[in-house]
Image (cartoon, rainbow, N blue to C red; front, side, top):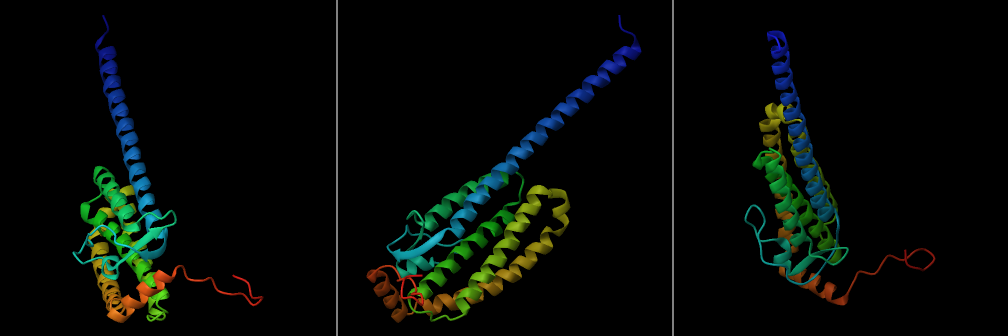
Length: 229
């Protein structure tokens, strides 16, 4: 029969082995959960950055996260990706997958909501810039400035999500402060966004946009040699 020492070492070895096995299993699961979030986040980013143009048409009726009518709904247009897919519909599907993956990985819901909301705003600001170009640039430099602000806000909001995903304990003490900063940033962005929406949704601008879209794609600029750029 084994002695007390052998039993002690055998028992401790079994406990240590079980602990190591459990740690490796949890570590593997965390890696899988993080990979799922990264995959979903990449899908959202692809949609947000892949808007090609706006075209006449009605997207499925829906509202933004803060309850507003979508600008595309007001203008009677669709934002489309390179393959002709409705961008807002694709974005909603990507958001659903991101939310599930982020919650499973332990990312707080409000952090995920800020990241998703920032992508939604970036897409609308892109629509604003595209629509403004179609009607002759009535917003001037404000259109590009709006897109820049939206991009910066998106980077900050998504950055917080990634920080909570990869460094949950280190990020926890600063999450509240960073959310307060995001609230300030989005309030400023919202004022600029609302001002641009008010200009674009004036009756004369909506009519000009519709007429321009009926005529077809915007012609490419001409080069000095007289050909298309």
